[in-house]
Length: 146
Image (cartoon, rainbow, N blue to C red; front, side, top):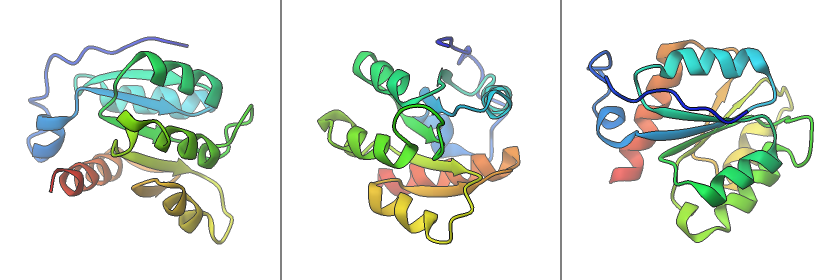
């Protein structure tokens, strides 16, 4: 699925100056239609959001577009998992410093460390609320802008 949401009005996000300043185009990579729909709803009016259901589509989109943020599920169900996909993305020069946030329901004890070691900037367990996601994005964007 490849569609975008409008990025016209960020006035609903006054508590997130880094998001307002730096987030224009994001990619979510998740095989769960419910998570994709929820994030799409959360991002409505915030930025342009593209959706990839698996690693193959994500890598194809990355070759075609630039992103300010990637939200990456770990267990994608088809193709590479999110950790492997992140390693491939980090090998692409223009994506060396792009923020990547893990969003996962994976319960492995060391999954957070695996994600960070692979090059992800933050880890957000599922389920999550809008403010939790936006807080995490805000923190990562602030850290990346220093």
